[in-house]
Length: 79
Image (tube, rainbow, N blue to C red):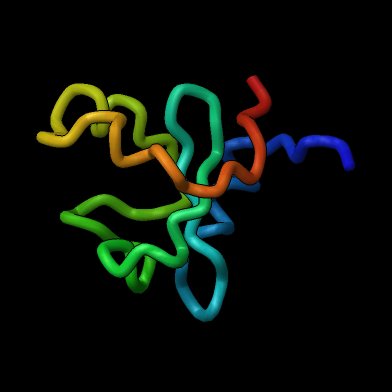
């Protein structure tokens, strides 16, 4: 199966609301955070699923990108 690519608008639809999965993009890779308790309802410490969170994760987050380990990769961003 071909890898799924997401535009910014397509990614925005995966906001974790109303039963939708919660996806976030970091450095061009799209991850599924739906099963993470911290992302329940598509929100986590003021961040919202369905967005590219590269800057937030790498520059503001105390845990950095190590939290991505083990998350399901669902695709990549379409530049």
